[in-house]
Image 1 (tube, rainbow, N blue to C red):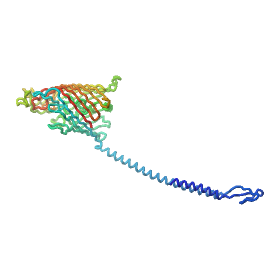
Image 2: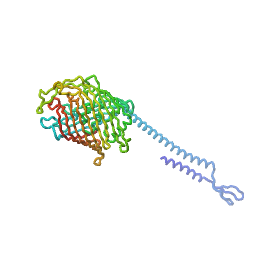
Image 3: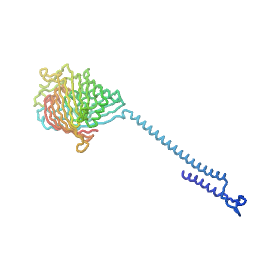
Image 4: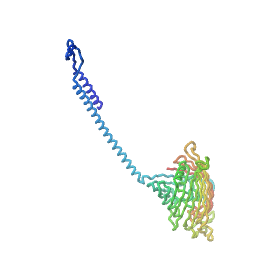
Length: 509
């Protein structure tokens, strides 16, 4: 439509030009008299065709004006269209901005920032030798209740983790476990429920309030989802059974250490998590999900530091060695209960003459110190921990054989070697072959009367990370353990030995 108007305007100008040529007058001049005539005649020579100047200018001006009017109309129409499009774009932009603002306001709500993840561990233990003979003590483990007679498949852990930042300074962490056993199987139990309160946006300085892991030991702090071996060592785990308690803990982690730990995790290496290079705290001390039993709090101090060994030369570039030490002190109230001691091996139940009830010493204090060193596997690695101390322990020979719970020394630890193999079978899978030796001689305070246990175990296995969602661990274990599973049974406090194949399938989600 716009091109047609422009064409008509041009045609008008051209037409006006043709019309002007049509109205031109021929003039002639007499060669003798030099007079001008409008008609030809004798002695007259044609001068040419002429038209009136004013009329030609007026006609041309009219033609130009018509073209200008047509062009101006088109321009006005184009301007109008552009104005409409501009308004539409402006409205669309305002809508996008408003949507973004609404989304941003919605994202600022802390409950929209909660992340959910978890994992499940399915286990199968198969004995190869030992302790199935009637009368022999049953081989049991404090780290895995499925080790024992008449057991096969079991769910060791079924965890869900809810975590997120409520704002730049406060983070929330909540973790239940759905595989807790309490006579029957698979009860839900609270494991973690705490908030991290930071004093800076980098979270270098923070306080952890609630039920969380007590910062004692390196392997104790490592998540069971990431830990290489199937169970934690008994020596350090006996200090804080289930690794958690209710209290307040303060941590300091410089930004460069935070970055180093994150870089190690990105490489697929297993750190213990961020519990500060320095940490101090107070907690109840009666173990996870247990009510406080005295007016005294445990006090714990934790230290660890990862060193990049690149300064030792090119051969050590990228290697990281983490070392540290921990101490704690507190009072653990242990009430006395009846137990079976030194019953005949042929007994199916504890004879009345072998039932004892210990007295309880007034000194229920517990003190421990521990050290650790970890060389992360790149590809070869080493890990070792040891702890010493004293605490409430059952002495069955005290009080003329009646038994007493009294303060006694304890000691134990472990050494572990491992190797990291990437791109297994031409895939992105990773394998960690490992071997671990552990020993412990001291109280297991989570059991009735805090009995003394003697543990000696060697485990060799391999963890195969098929992909991020699936891991398989197969291990061979040879162990000697004191049975403290049931204080009323005849094999309580008796030593059991055996060999077994242990397997675990872990799903990460």
